[in-house]
Length: 544
Image (cartoon, rainbow, N blue to C red; front, side, top):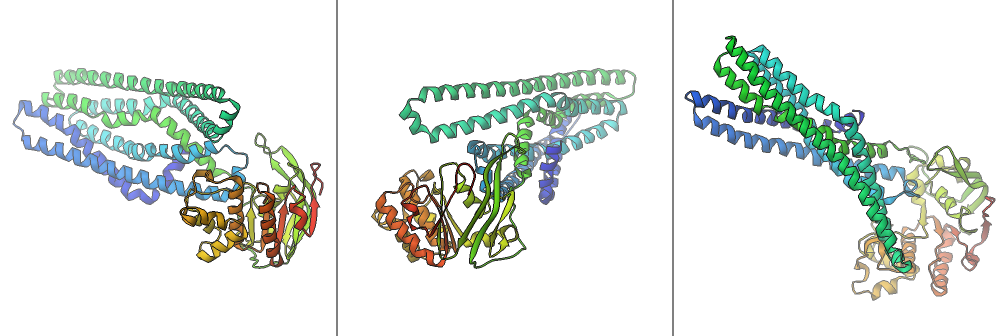
């Protein structure tokens, strides 16, 4: 209920549309109930057939209007939720993706959010419609017989309230299990597709296929469990409706025998009992079908409840230029995923300085924390001890947007978007001219290669940049950093995928641009670090 309540609060801006949906739906169901009732009256008395036709047409129009309003609400809210989720991911920053299963996150962003359509389009207004329709029918019956009205209200409650309560616990558990397994299968498939070349190379295809088959069978079993609850719900509903109708017939005939009601009321009550359960049946079936939606909603809300490890700072000091960055007695540990209180030491008592106009190198073996230092300088994470200061001001007291506007960060693995080369470079400076883009590409020694392509800078980059080599992607990443023209250039293994010729050209460009900025160069290569004015060595023992 807590999950459903939180999801319901998002409807507030569209409340007028929801009221229209409830009005159209309630009126439409009353028209549908009136058709067999009036038809039964027409068997024994004169009745205008045109009115029945008008009710049929009105039922169709009102049903369409109700569905239109409900789906307008649903798809508007799904778009809003996606915006909220993407904004949350931006807030959580790169730290959210470090070591996370991308497939599970993709499943949340796509199928989990899409499943919420069932709640917004087929849950909120139908519950209100069922309540109003049931009360309306009971009022009509109550005008003839209070006993019949109370009898029907009892069975409306049994179908619309008791049935969902009976199945909800088991259905919710089955739904949550199914969504979790669906998410894990998505993550495994994404990982398998990305590593398809390695699977072929090392002959692990059969093992992967076997694992996919196993996970698919597990998913099938969890879906079967959910389907059993749906079947049980449908059987229970049908049984209650039949019992209600037969009981209504018996009760009506008894009241007629006692002269408490006339025969017309018997016919009215019987036809109403058969035709008026549709709204509550729709609600009752939500008890099982809504289980996966609630599980998906919990996963979405769980993401929205996450706290950033380094919340963005605003309303504090803005720095437009600098002379020195200092790392003072800094220690840092990554939280353990299994236990957030258990920490693995990465850096301890680090002392460094990065002056403007100089190239500072950081050298060390893999796992020694070199890249982590750059992430801390970017404030993707916050140090547990000590501080990083820019112009003697702790970066935790500097507006995050201001800090990152000063910094340009080139990771070892460059991410490219499925767009043109030009647009992939332009993200570093949205208002960059073509001349500026080409100049940055020349500094990264990638301009000639781009020019040789049939479409030049308008060449499309394939998904994940797979139509370029590792060295070409790395040079495109460097071109971005040159285009950004930041005052602080953070380079993480910028030449790891380059040959000695390209390495020499790029390092020459880095050295030229270092006169007006601070360059922090992380590498394990001695040849790369030759251009550094000063080198800090970080060991695997966590000592600077």
